Image: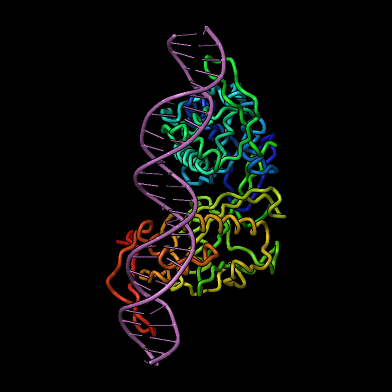
Length: 221
Length: 221
DNA sequence: ACAAAAGTGTTTATATTACACCCATGC
DNA sequence: GCATGGGTGTAATATAAACACTTTTGT
């Protein structure tokens, strides 16, 4: 072995550990997922979730945040762990254990930049994804389930929106996450009991209809 | 380098990956957790969750099942992933990422055997645990939360019991998991709507009171 | 006969669902 | 003045919570 790279030696084989990200956004009332075209083997040229190796001195959450930043240029987005995926054959090269996270990117920050790892990145309708590499379909399924389940009980859906938003905008996000229409009055009742929003008193004007009250997350207070 | 052990070399540092287990049982209407006294550094002599390295060719779930078997002699117990814990400093020696699982051991199989890794093992009341090593308190907290939350919506609590059980026994398990008393009639109503149990027609006799009908999980059918 | 746990319904409160009209604005 | 989405309430149903007595057995 005469490589210039440093070598790290262990008395037992070690798996690689990666983070994989299911990065969601809601665009025009449709739930979308960021997929990248792989620039390297394995699965070169295939669509996959963005992800990468966890560095030896960074936390899992930090690795996920770093990958998110590399892929989208975004910092401060909502991130939550989905779980660990560790089937021994999930990567054909070597043993790779992946910790999956989901991220939420709000519509108004969603400018795509070409990532450093990826030849190409695209927002895809979650209901109509291309074939994904590795076990990424299972990761996406788990991430979607967590997302929808948590949105049902918390104000998580506000993460898809900017700092100020109308109740109808929030309702569209919920409809995208749940995959079904919601009654407007019932939704507003639910909001006032479950979510902790506060009205800004301000109003969104300029559309050809009655202006809508703008709200904020109360946690931003 | 003249060791007898094989050496594994990588061009970048790799973390170790372990599984840690929160093994629960309900004993006399109290939720208990299996803790082991560590026989090795770090934290030698301290209480900790049982766990160990994930082998290079086994799945995470298989590693958890193997550790459970090594620690308790049990196979076929309920196992569910809680999540990955990967703070870079959670183990003082080296980078170790741990995938936490919880396991449920039914009362009638709960004979403790000295594990191979552990000098000593004990069932501890979850409400009164000793100081645990590493980030194991956080793992236990997450595991307890998942356990209670899932028991609320599924028949999971039956995993704490033998193949046949009375409704009162099941109620005691729920009370232990939720940490509060439940009304008997409401519990039975909930059981008949949420859980899928079937009566065996048989009855548990021998106690100084009216015999109780015995039930089974319907999934065992 | 008595102690001890098994078993069983009804009432009330709360949460969820279904459903239709007027309002304020831009054009 | 008309098209567009914003905003609002009530009745029906389903779910959850409170609550007490009779039954069957072992001793």
